[in-house]
Amino acid sequence: MLGPVILAASRSDKMRRIVSAAPVTKPVVDRFIPGETVDQVIPIVTDLTDKGLEVTLDVVGEDITTVEQSYAARDAYLELIGRLKALGLGTRAEMSVKLSMFGQALDEGHELALANVRPVVEAAAEIGTTVTLDAEDHTTLDSMFAIHEELRKDFPQTGCVIQSYLFRTEDDARRLAANGSRVRLVKGAYKEPASVAYQDKAEIDKAYVRILKILMAGEGYPMIGSHDPRLIAITQDLARRAGRKLDEYEFQMLYGIRSDEHLRLAAEGHRMRVYTAYGTDWYGYFMRRLAEKPANLLFFVRSMITK
Ligand code: FAD
Image 1: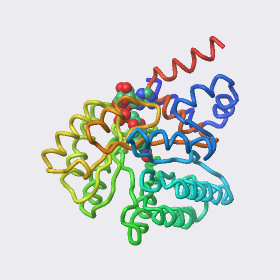
Image 2: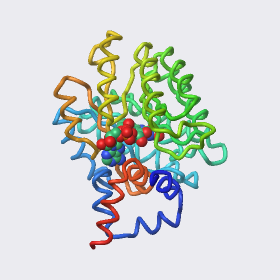
Image 3: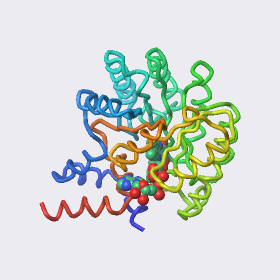
Image 4: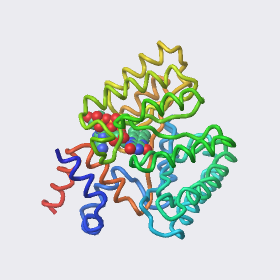
């Protein structure tokens, strides 16, 4: 029951100010967002890759209000890619981007976001890696898929994310599986109305499995973005039945969540990619992590009370 309340708070400026200013927030944030700068995140990336894990990097930020902020987002990714290049980490680290941070919701936002993300995709390709377009709330997805299609004309490795809680996603999965896309499948982290999304956890999980079957049987590269042990076991089974080799799909989990499982799957020979977010505008990302697991919120509230 708490999840929807926290997700509503994730869009509140007042709550953003209160939570961001609370001194006890930082240690809890650090569990999920291990740095605010490139300098702080690079050692995390090398630590993860030294352990045999792959990485996808997210410079946190969303819901920007000016064109200048969209340019700053683009430049932050370009700086990051420059650092990965210098360290020779290009093939181990991908980028994940939220198009809202690239200006998608501003006037002429679709064109602006495309213009901002293209140089990032180009720079990533130059160092032998790629970019995945994160899925945000359902109102943004037609634009995201159109940008994905446009980018794939020159950079077919560009990935995108689909969310099993949305009714539309089975159709999206069929299209993406047929055209050979890299696709991350997640359950979905936003507050969506019953007119467009399943509200019941069991329904969301069942849809996840139906979509997984579509992706596994298709031409593309499925990226399983989940910490759910049941879905991980089902993935392994479906991949075997589809005759997919271990390098023909991958698992992805978030930094700070089920870290032992990251290592276990990698040790089994799976490609395991850790989604690692960093930056100063962490509020929206952090609140979604709280909403996913009430125990995180209790930990957070307890640390506020005992301080
Ligand atoms: P759940 O049933 O929520 O969780 C299964 C188990 O995992 C829980 O019992 C718990 O042990 C653990 N767990 C899950 N979440 C947490 C948490 N926050 N803290 C502590 N333990 C937890 N969503 C989008 O809408 N768009 C995206 O682009 C997107 N990208 C993602 C990228 C990756 C790599 C991952 C892993 C998730 C992404 N998500 C995205 C979030 C996703 O939609 C889910 O909200 C999130 O993954 C929780 O769902 P789950 O599949 O892990 O299953």
